[in-house]
Image (cartoon, rainbow, N blue to C red; front, top):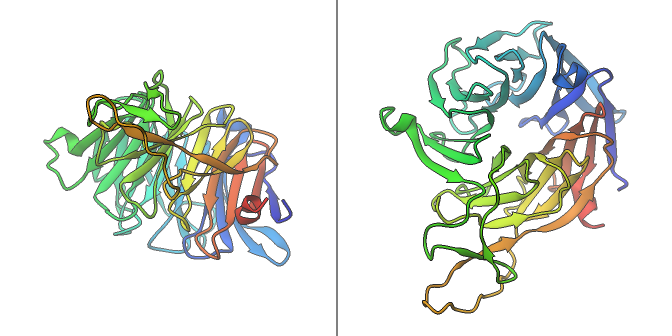
Length: 364
């Protein structure tokens, strides 16, 4: 792979990397000293220039940083999820200290996401088993959504500001609709068992080879992301190394597609903002892989079953490319929103941030 840029974070192990939604030349990296076990955190704000990747600003925190999200209101602001349960809002124009501090979580805050539609709120998830909805102008949260177990990732629907998703240690993908009454299960509308077989429709589904999909042993789900073109499709991944996609309109229907190939747990998935069937995944096997979920490919028609009810077929996704330049766990991956649709950033515990052209990877 010829096109690659590198930035080092000496003494700090990255946990997340995100491109700015405003500039193709700006990105940020959330890091932790000592692999996030003990010590402080540092936020690196990076800029791309003719001289390569340059550090424009850093912000220190007293505890590890596990995730970040750029503000959708202000191009110079971003929030960081910290190991002490706090969320800090930093401004690139303000030196050293956060402009706001949000601290209600009782354990590590592990995920944050800014509302991409209304832009006036953000969400966080924590190991304390809750998801919280916040306003950037208030220190107190607006809502608390109970999960009940360690919640690794939360996100807004890219087209509906009222839909919030979360994945957790109990092998579940939860969907909340903030328009529903709080008395109705705290806005909970769907719980999708990620590792279970289909229970609706024909009662089962088949794999591409014709065998019946019987599900797998429940495992922790570490990451998920909404498809940017089909706002009812979500990709999930975690400890069992398999990436699955689901249609939230059919919570009992089982997965739409399976993507296998990672050798260790998948830490992050990210749908491409440029194509409806492309996603990237970062894994503890020290690789980033680019996939198609097969949704744009012709499918083999399964023979009818004796009952006459046609079972759903679980598509087999295809690995399109492999980026294996990291030498430690890869914990973050993100797509640049701009350009022809190729550039990705990845970050890993090898204290490196790599920027690379996924389009050239796909071309071989």
